[in-house]
Amino acid sequence: MDIFNFLRKAIHDLVGTPEEDIRPESTPDELNLDLFDVEELVLDVENEYDVYLPDDTHFDTVGELAQKVAAA
Image (cartoon, rainbow, N blue to C red; front, side):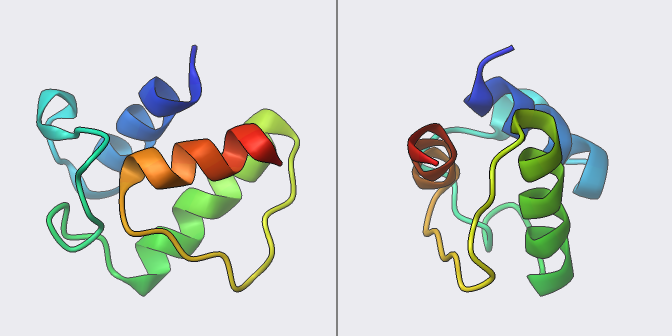
């Protein structure tokens, strides 16, 4: 599974947003992700891809987070 599709599923599991509504340009606010959801999402992706993202990792869109994971 590619990173973006993993993120789509993880976001769906966290907040119930239909996967087809989650696009690379979707922002955390549009997806109703609060600070705790974002932290959980980062932990999930770190565990899935065995990467480390600094605690101050910031992303404006789901696609940007996918790029940061790919570069880690």
